[in-house]
Length: 341
Image 1 (cartoon, one colour):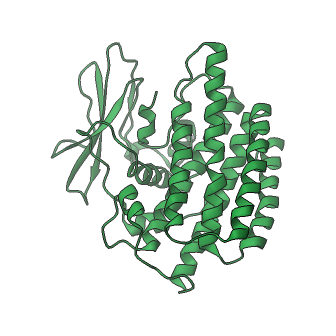
Image 2 (cartoon, rainbow, N blue to C red):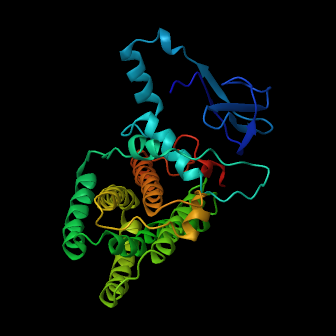
Image 3 (cartoon, rainbow, N blue to C red):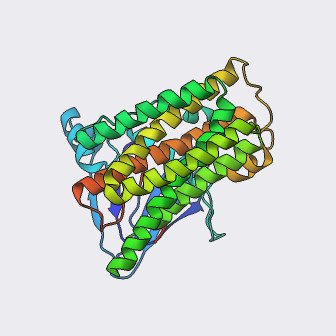
């Protein structure tokens, strides 16, 4: 997808639905509008931003006049999530926005993604290649943890999902707590890190509530949760206070593994090993699914969430590595969390 005009603004942004209009536009001296055309929805969704004394940087590039090398250089220079494709970045943000609570009822949600988008556009297993000793250590730790988890659950993918989400909600809340305390100590703004991290933890908790409607963990699995959550919380808190960069990189790699686990879950459903039962009501409401949605649809949407957590944490690790910890994090595509303060 070519972006002919890009606006970098420091102002609140909202989705609004309009009919007709151009694909890209610039509205006045105090506002920027980015128009996203969705043919399936039969209209346009507009990401608007306006504020006094807005700092705005605009540029327009004709894709037809750029050579392949120039395009590659442009992508490398401009994209913070360059380890995934631009198509995947846009689709992951759209999928994540579908369950984002909106306080302003005048806003509307982006259109639902098709099954093809969820399977092909987001279904590719992206991997952030380790670039230094911290990355390699984080990746190695993830591979060690993977051996124990796979050995315990084997092909019980539904039970794996329940236990997985009980610990997956820990990093976001620990990171948010760390940033919160840092902001208090320094008596300075946090620049928008705290709320997205809290929202990540809440999203993982919602996954748990959804899977609890699908299957019930055994007594042994409940004991495992008690032990794993306690140990992992203490470990991750220590790691984050020691090296936030390593902590976020570890979560990025753990989310890569979560993506693989949910892909195996889908394969088990397709093979008939797990019944493709109707989706729980809580999942239908949370993801705004059709009333006849099935378990497979839920797994696709949960996997898309894990893609967002994977790439957002890799991006935060990169921010710590670059020393950009006192600036707003770079969000993916048109992620609505960019509006959080």
